[in-house]
Length: 580
Image (cartoon, rainbow, N blue to C red):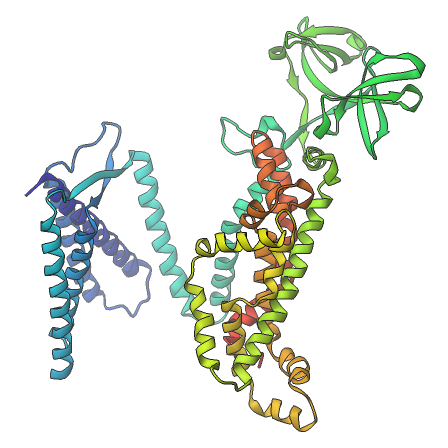
């Protein structure tokens, strides 16, 4: 027996032992916190059995060779293994599992007929196992290797995990006991569970929002995540040496400093904002310039043993800062140069809303602050939702209500298209759209929505089939045509299903990234999802700006979901009952 096989058996024994150990702990907690009607004698016997098998499994795992190899700083190591073997061996293992399963079922069959069927099935799987063994032996290069590994735990981590498991089990038992009771206790437990779940799943979103409102210095901290952001205090300052000017240029407000004065009142302005054209130089008439104050950061420090507060009026080339002192009064107005390490920023609890306009200012000027991306996304979402609902509902109505030759065969063919992976149809679709001249347009992203999808047709067909025929028959007696009955009678009955499809389509179109990546080339045709990916590539090193842009991208999706969640839940719970 090889070392790899022994390690595999030891790993299985260790995990089985830990599972039995957790089961025994759970049963002990049930005796301590569970209901009073528990048969404690039976539970004590079960606890003893689980503890015995748990200790036996862990002992076997530790006794086998190679199981105790770990680093000195690791106090607990949960072993892992993975077999690397050819496909014939994998299929042979699956056949062996089914042979054992069918044999077990045959032993507990209710009658001779069922037992015979189980044994026949076991025989078929046994033949498959023999065939795979022969196929494996035919290739001399075939071999089975065992990859060994483990999950290391330090003493502190192991204690934390174990205590967390025990606390979770105790909470589950107490909550289950309270849930079996009546009245206030049950309501309180349910509300606490819902609130705890909301907090747990809301933490990532809260981190996203908080990060979008933090300064760069709070993005990483030796004390962990900074949940309460702070912002540096600033003061308005007109720099006489290097004044800041503002001017309307190209339809947008541009700020910068004058680098050169020419003839005829023309000056060259080095742009500082917007950030998308920062560093460029534009020529402008000096009379159009308007001086605006800078936001000078405020720092504190010590001068001759006295603490002071002041604002930076100049950043030196060596990294030091020239500070004009504002307090105390005896030092006010003095200017001194300090090294960066000698100064401490004056900050207060607050949020940096400037991250949001700054993130938009990084976008290309032709996008008008992201409005072009938003317009393209809204076009795709609106046309996608309208096209999907209309096309899918019409096709589903035809398959559920109309009688025509080959209806069931055509419906089966439609459903079979769901088995085709999207990667298979990607190239043919691209060639078709290229032939039509639709590349670098929005047409390939919304026109297919007007050709019903199989899943939506299937879902709506089930809803239509749940509507009583008497409603449609009454409409026909009153003179309604098929289209009138479809629009006025049938469609209002399936509003929950239509709302579900609309929400799915909206979220899919809003977050669609692969489609624009394939068909779109120019920035003026990009939707928000594609723009977000490009923004991440350009500004991934600035988490505040990236999170701010991401927040603005996902807020409409969250708003739609919260306003439409009633219809979403209703559509899921009705399960095709046609809105009744």
